[in-house]
Image 1: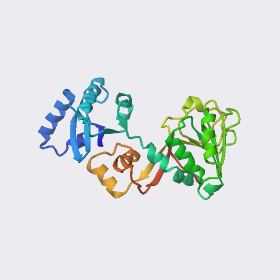
Image 2: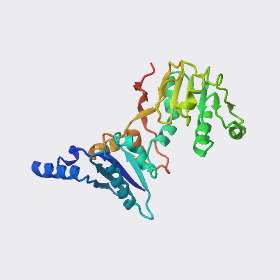
Image 3: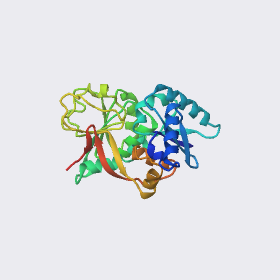
Image 4: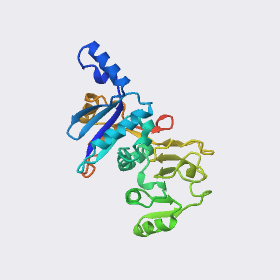
Length: 285
């Protein structure tokens, strides 16, 4: 796997590139001719420095460059800076590291951070999902083993009945009543509902929604609770050094972390430094 970190061109990336005049000339040429710079930072890891990120033609060049990067034996995965994320649609044919797998793995820690001194094993948790896939099944099974009750809200009721039978030792309910299913829910985990789907339900106005879709949930009728749609991690020193050394400060540290670990191995889960909502950090006092 080759990791390619794609970021906007920054003068800081050139502050050591010879004398001041040389830097200025080089900077002008790169911007005038839309030259995409490549830096190999480690084996299997490269940075693409993109000038003029608001011009469409730079992405045509970038896609060609990525196509040339492919080999028969190596796959590419892309890590996008916060600014480049605006243009994520251009990379639809590539695997993009989005941090979701780590987010899912940290759900238990997120729940405990929300609950403070309240015991997780006494909680009723509501899960929104329409995708009956391996990831969601594993996520539900893991949470079900930690809490009192799992309530699955889905329009694929028949499919999730299979999971209900598999987990007969756990307390599970499955429903899709848009007026009643979420009316008393205190903690909701949204695995894959779109905003327009969620808006069809009557939701407890003081609920906490943990949403893994990355979509900004707004205009939920009568809703006055908290929405958590992102997290920040406490990165270990080795990851911090990687970020500083390569000037990757404008990337989500969740995605940096996920790009650097081997997902096929069991990794020590990082600590969470912040829960992020629609308008910044969310604190539970």
